[in-house]
Image 1: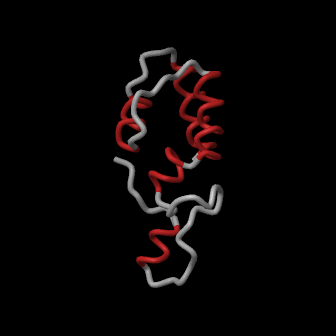
Image 2 (image 1 turned 30 degrees about the horizontal axis):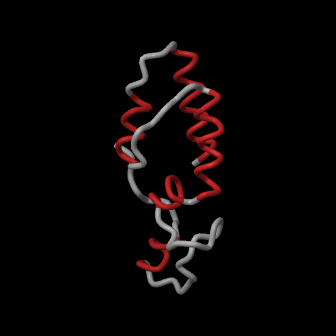
Length: 91
């Protein structure tokens, strides 16, 4: 299970820290985990680049679905490890 504990701006605000809620990368929507990794045009382009090079195709943009899909890859051990590393580097 992956926990949603990253210091995204929605979390900072919920902790009482005053900050601009807009995404630092695209400045188009409020920053949350799902926005930052799936809806933000900048981070989506980074992950899409690596995913296409690794021939990984995800039909969902939901955090739980993508992480489950990564953990369920049926490729070689080396390909899985490279996929995990690429995802972690993107995150």
